[in-house]
Image (cartoon, rainbow, N blue to C red; front, top):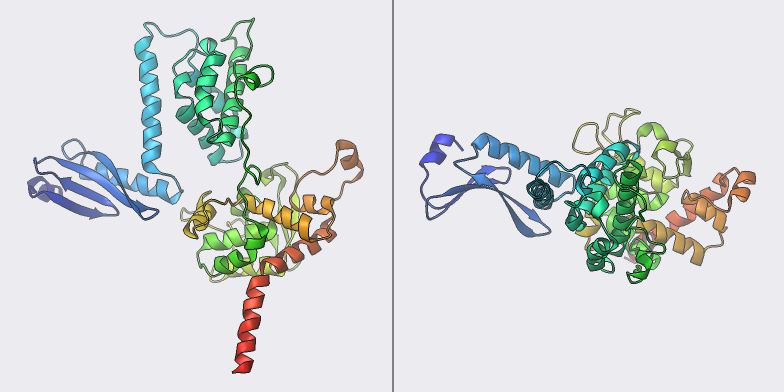
Length: 417
């Protein structure tokens, strides 16, 4: 599209620039830029501004930014709405205050707290979750000075979501408690004072017991269904499907798989060594690779120039891995979005506990969990690596059992023919 041609366009309709960017001309002669995409087979439209106020170059830049957010598994409309809500809260705070407040608002101090602690957080996703949960679910607290927040305010924030999104509500309460404790330590709240977000002796008496998912924190696919699911997963060609396949085979966490680099893998010995700084417990974790897991890695090596510092599952951005949402999106495309990637670890744990004779300690070590009390761990310093080899082999054979059965039936049909 050329700006002059667009200026002269009067006929109502949609005029495409490519990449999802459209200029819509209305019957009254007004014109607006609109970015259009499809999410879960539904058309999504995001207005970018008036043709009179936004140039073609600016509209293209906004559309490009929206496409980049989509690639990272984020929703541009939701992120913009949250940003507007935050700006609205800030404007309300400024309008209500005749003079700059001596005591910071909850939003102001939340930003200070996050900035002071975010370097120690393990992922960009964790940082985003902190900001999102506070601005989205604690909106009524944002403009309040930290020393004016009461237990009644906390109940008003938490009650609507307490049993609807129980885990998110629990994390939000804990985050508010930490922020207010930090504000007290910084001298913005004077004694005597009790943290209104405290659970014990406080909110525990004012909120109902939270409902837990039947399968724990993360919805987990029943292990009985996994072999058939694995057949379907292995037929999908996308790199994200291979990442999910390896995640399940190795019973690892999402970050551990997506952050995997070639220098961590030794295909000859069949060992993947995850460094301590990428593990939840900050302890190096060696994973014995089954032949099925090695096969996945060999597929990822095909037609690639392997550099030790390259990611095994590279994303579209140079030097970046696949996005945090990539494996989740595979599950959703397979109509299994009600289960989670992390829940596959629960499926592994349930199968090993119900259907095998492997020792509980060995299974827990396979999940990179600490096992036993501090005294037991002091004497038991190794992590049953040799025994874990058999655990991972058994797991791989179970996952591939349906595929092996299909191959056997096909071979039998050939012989009969």
